[in-house]
Image (cartoon, rainbow, N blue to C red; front, side, top):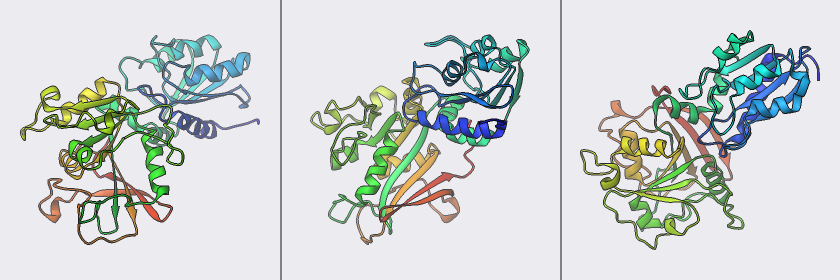
Length: 354
């Protein structure tokens, strides 16, 4: 295929980068497309797993000598340091590329500087092509790098009237199997799943990512985090079944806030230190309320079932809202039907990343 534009190449690079979601953390997802001097695609790559070759290295290996004099189109500024792999900036210089087009600069102080190294070597560097698309595809990692704590997704399941359980406490199953399968796919894209001790005591969840049809576990499991201020998680709870790593985060270990409960900013800072870049907050309603009240939720994913209960536990409790003027305002970014249910994705307004 000849004559591919840089814009089209970046669109393809963004698509390639998405293939690494759920497997690259604590590294970012990155895609790269290499064009020869005539604009023909001669190499493609994406970062597949932490410790593995970066997207630029994979694309350069495909292109070989055809990369010389060509253009590298990459979703994130090439790294400029030696970690588990060498610097991609140097690899591009050695390959003889004439131009590097970058969507988003690297905010990681350890790895940034690739653009300056390329320019110093006489390579033309262009920034900002399809930046918004690349940013959206890498939002969790970019957010975590810019502010020092994970990107937090609050996921809930509820009836159309906002109930997460019936009056007798039963909650299996509010939503359909199709929606639950979708939740497990979502779990597979994050580094940690958080739940409050109340949810563990009431529902005894596994908090693993698995195939619901045969029960098999996904190859990569998120860290299971039980937010348990006073250490009430039973030793026999299913979160201790050995299927995935588990951390019971207590106030004694993490630190306590003014209310005596686990200090949530301190919790997120510790998760970031442990390599968590994206966290899925699953339960319960009080923990979700505390995160929302503190302004610590970056995205909301709600699975709404076409059912009415009229009584029972609500999906959210005490989010710090006492009057309608203080309501947490959301921007709906997607509504998708999953089986009989709706999956609604929304972002809290006025919460820019970084």
